[in-house]
Image 1 (cartoon, rainbow, N blue to C red):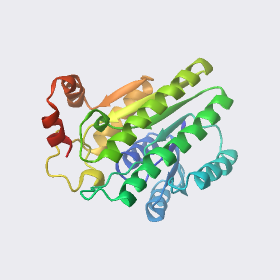
Image 2: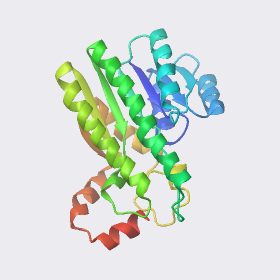
Image 3: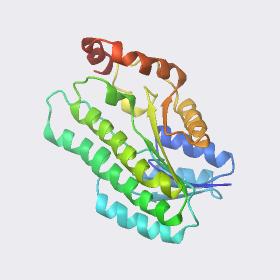
Amino acid sequence: MQTYLIVGCTSGIGKALTEILVTKGHRVLGAGRSQSALEELSRKFPDFFSGKTLDIRQEQKTMAALDEWLDEQPAIDVAVIASSIVGANPELEWEIEKNIIQTNVLGWAAVCNRMARYFEQQGRGHLVGITSLAKYLASVNPAYIATKAFEGKYLDGLRSRLEPRGVHVTEIMPGFVETPMIADRNNAFLVISPEKAAKSILRAIKKRKRRAVISTRWKIFRLLLPHLPAVLLVKLRG
């Protein structure tokens, strides 16, 4: 049995990961914004799940809460940072852009930073960040694709620091996954279920991959990306 921390466990990929892990007998510390979803997971898996409400947009409060929580818990083996948002912004409103940046850059990096220091001090561990293949696409949603590019580079930097200290770092790059994040899209393709994505992610974690594209069909698409015209990439991403 291992102990996992999953930040963003109340919906989408994070929730699917949580449910698979606890059914396999692993212990999960789950954090997210939905108190009702956390309570539901606690009722469903009382012996294997412990939840905490976190809004990572408030990065200082998040890091303080993690400090307190980590002091109370046994050693964590794997931390998965799955929190992320995307929002349609046809008018390029700054408040929408800022919310995406606060979540996917400041909040996301704050959690990665705290867990990197935790694993470094522990002398072992595995940090997993879920980014997106969207970082390779042209898009009319500049904040989202820019934040995904940032996340990948941040993980690259942490990997360079942590690997010599016995800590593994994995970047997970999904394509379209059937979650609320793509609910308003009518041109999504090669869509996979959160459960299928979660199973692929767990295989990548087990193999300690540095980077993994989820799933197999998207690996092929990733190879084709450099050869696709920019106008097509805009249409694909939207």
